Image (cartoon, rainbow, N blue to C red; front, side, top):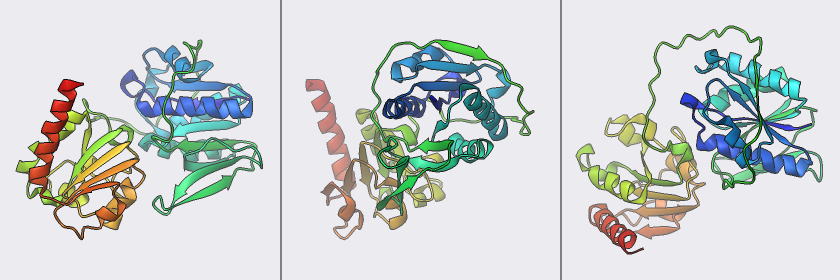
Length: 320
């Protein structure tokens, strides 16, 4: 029985999270001594390239009606492909769409369900997967006992690797329910790496004193090739757009590097960023709670440190 992975393709393109899911499916299939099959819904450019990340076959349901996301229709399609492929382990991404689909697909397949896993199944004593709990302060192990199993993968849990070549693509059509949601307009943010996928993030808070000062943060992010973010008070006051808000009530991220300037580090903010591999804090308050969670801390005025850091990085890039 193969592992089935759902590779999202918004606007016909595969996101980093989709490639992570395929690679995770490859690792899981290897542990289970089986194959990884990817399912793609709607328009997609070069679906055969998913084979480079571990898919041995791609099932493409190319109905144009699937281009606009509808959780009921998409869940029905994924469940039908799982049944057609005789797959009893289904993997989705822990994205906004993945969160809406995981439970629905699990119910349709009468499966055990776990959202936000960060480990390949351990088969030594059942079918055990791991996920972070209590805002990342602990890990919980789940033994999935039903025949069918559905999980979603937490972003940045695995470093993507190319492990194969282009995979054969099987185009099929399915008899799907009519979507109950009518999409009249879709607004998305283009041209930047979405925060859940970003490996480098530069964030700032109320220590910036006002939106007019944000240029130094954007310049640092541009120099690093990073995505910008902010704390909740900054988004709530309209200094920055809400899609940049990271924390417990915003976007939870797991980048390789998180630079926080002028953010005190309240528990709600830490809960959304504490899985970052390296945290750098810039704050002139030596009592800022964020320093306790930081790998590196600079206790100084951010308006002095950030421009100097940017210039140092530019010089380093020029010489290397």
